[in-house]
Every structure is written in C-alpha cells, then in structure tokens.
Image (tube, rainbow, N blue to C red):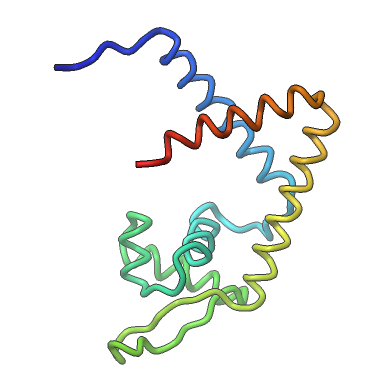
Length: 146
C-alpha cells in the first residue's frame, strides 16, 4: 500500500532539488576546472573517494561503456591527473589512481569552492540565517543515512 505524500514534502523536495542544482552550478564556476568534462570530473571524484580502481570497475560505477571510460582515462592521463599501476591481485589488470597533480588540483578546487561558499554565506546571511542553514543541513543529512 502506497502512502500519500504531503504537499509540503513535495514542495520541499522540489525546492531542495532546484536550489542544490543552482548551488552546484555556482560552485563549479567558483574555481577553474582546467576545462575538464563532467565525466572526467566524476572519475577524479570517484578515485578520490573510493581509491584506486580498474577501468572496468570505473566504467561500471559510472554506468558507461568500457570504451567510453578508456577515452576519459586517456584524456586524464594526457593531463597528468592519473597514474596506472599493475593490480597486485591480477597482473593482467591495471589499477588507476590519482596522480600527485590530481591530488593538488582536487584539494585546491575544494578549498576554493569552500572559501567562495563561506564568503557568500558571510556576506549574504545573518548569523541567525547561517545557524538555520546549519540546522537544515543536519535535517537533510538524515536523508542520506540508512
């Protein structure tokens, strides 16, 4: 039996989706991404979060064909953002990991975005409004928990 969804839940869901989408775009604009494609950025983020992976594992995780992932990795390799190492468990496979240049790029990018967001919140919100945002994030974080 399906439970009815309240009008306020539908409105809150729509508002959160729209605001987060706009915020994501603004954060992307806050720092130079070296003209990386969304696919390249997604792979760097995944490697940063999950650690080294094979091309086929990355393709499965990103839901793309292995050939598409190979092209994405070739572009990242050309920019010096990934490293390839033999898989210790299977010498026929290679594991892809972030290069030191990618680590620096990710850290700098993250810091620039966080600084932009902190400055924007400082400039546009009162202390009470910032505390409301902190409380709202705690509530939204509940949606990500099992």
